[in-house]
Length: 476
Image (cartoon, rainbow, N blue to C red):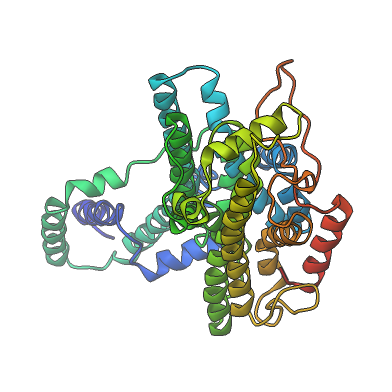
């Protein structure tokens, strides 16, 4: 039987080992195997057998959060909702959570603007966006905390087994080991104790809860970095609009904004849908990410053109200054035409002279041509032209991964209608833009959702059929 002194020495050694490793990566292979087993079969549990609070939200909370996200996306982004519902159930929940986050980021200026103005509005915007950054970080980190708790529980069990297996060790060896472990514990940096502190649970917001559930089910491949970039870009966009800053200088600046918003959302969608880890799939994933960058830029440029009439009615121009100067377009001419259409009257020759009409078409043509070029690049990267007669990369992408790039369908339909129906006139009646996202109407009731495919230049049925066609074939 071991002596009391031996038991105390072994206990001190185990405690020192736990203190040394609690803040760093899991180095013990047995502990790492236990973490993989727990994460693949059941939510992590503490040493007392209770479920870790960081593992995932409760099923009821996750279900309620998903319903909220579905209503939010359907209300404010019906074009995305139309293709998101074509995904399998689990992937649909993750994608709707990401799309709901984008909607919430777009709604921040609307809600903040009702409560303050001037410098107060800018401060309120920063506070709101910082809250979303912190909330997304908490949601994305919560499953990792659960994995660390599971590793600690597994290590505690292993230490108990080691304590029982060392009953026959000599007293001198135990004393020497005690001295070594105490010296190692004394040199442990203070940051390890800080890292081992439990992090708070994510805020009780439906979208944050849905993101938490998405991260827990998708695993570590779904990271917070693209979501952080999305929120940062939406904040810059809102602050720029609130301050009345001029439009971007170059077309590349507009592309950079599209990369920071729509492309980041596509990266997150691809990660949420995921795939296997074979080398061929890894190559396809790299090609998909490259294609997502082009698709995101194309969607961003198309959305800028779709929203130009509304922005011009608010005396904001989204066309780059260099593009306007090259085409000979004056922003004031665009503002006057938007104001005339907003007032319900046809623009007079004074409001809209022929030279201004030709200059606008030239400027829109330059932006639209760049968007079409990005779509072609994306489809060429994935082995096809992606049109209704091409394969769109079907041979190199799973259908679920191709579904993540389905926003390209709406952009393609709009750009085609802009060329064939409107001859690059963004004010054409067939391209009437949908109303911008708002939280409430003047009567205090939720606003009605915009018509499906509004502003695309095609009927809702044509849009739905195009989506189902590409979803069935695994193209975009």
